[in-house]
Length: 488
Ligand code: HEM
Image (tube, rainbow, N blue to C red; front, side):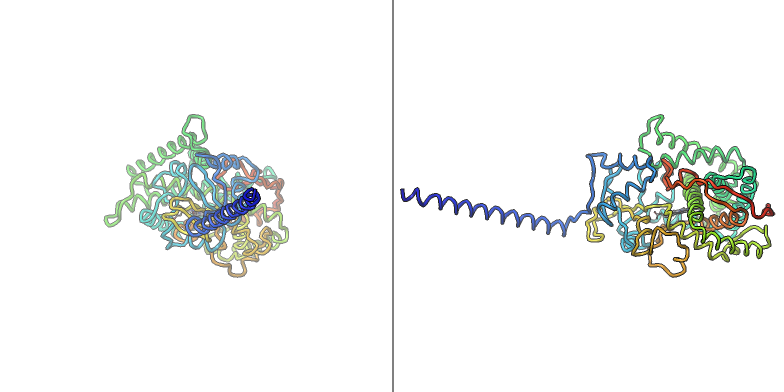
């Protein structure tokens, strides 16, 4: 009886003791797990999606949405913050959007990260493309390509681009409307092909442009090499481009004619005894790379610039007045060159502000070469780390009213790594000066030749575009203000 009186209390205290011990044990376990995580594996937030395919389907389907491919990144940036992870095409990707991480990942002396594009992109551009090379091979190729951008070759490319712009804008008069993106694509393509391989035959240019656009579309497609798929079409287009370039190289070797272009310089370099020669494959892959890296980026930036100017009439009026004054000073029709463009400081700020707002290359991928910590998060060897330039360009801590088009923000010096339109460090864009020059030439000719307004203000992004391109193409309505821009 006594026992039965004591037992319930005894049992109760025993149970309470065991319960407390369990709770204590669990708390300690959670705390130790958290501690271990923060020291060894404080993984960035984010979802790795489904087994095997990860979030690849969501990434690919963003291609078709009106906000474009970047929408995939933006949604996760808003949900998880400045650092998050995801899984695309079988690889873990981390996106980072602070100037500090941009500096540590992109700076020339970073030994923890190397450039890495998705395997499918390397297959389309070729494994000898400068965009896909690492370390010494990249240094070697970058040295060779950067030497091709001499002030002479630049001036001749700018002159050619200027002539094409003047001719195209003269043709606009017949229709009173023009689609900026379409013409900018054609003009930029023709000017780059002339600079690289002296191509100026209309039929050849059209065939090559069609193939190049199939290759660029395949760069963001699912890498399935089945007949009928977008990726398969891209691979076939690459084969045709390679064949055409090989024919051109053979023809140059057999002929004694001299061409003033990049191809000729590369072939001449191979004849020099003290220079390490380039294989034909190295030349072909890099000519294709320069066309792809230069055409869509520049043309798309031109169309965005026209749209932003239209939305900011005050800036447009100021620019037009300044450019008309300069036009008078340059004696009207003289072709533009680097020297004359250097006098267009306001136009240059408009180009920069357009590039910030549009951020044509939205993020820059690198591969982590070893386990490391960034922003307090653990990054594993082999993960792809992407610097999210678009988010940096729209960070209110770096740019006041970041969605406002304000060229004067470039009157003052910016914080390091806050303007990344052309990247930074050892992989900085090799076409940086050429692209800016092309944009300024287009701008100058447009505002000194026509009064114009954008006819379709829809900001939707084109489908299947590796860079954000206006779906509308940016059509403008035009009325001539001066009629004397003829080819000198
Ligand atoms: C507005 C136009 C352009 C923009 C916004 C742009 C942007 C960029 C960016 C951001 C990078 C670096 C990517 C990274 O670090 O991962 C890059 C690299 C590159 N760009 Fe451009 N680019 C433009 C025009 C051009 C033009 C006209 C050419 C040449 C015809 C060109 C050739 C290259 C090359 C060869 C690289 C690779 C450099 C290397 O890996 O060492 N780009 N570009």
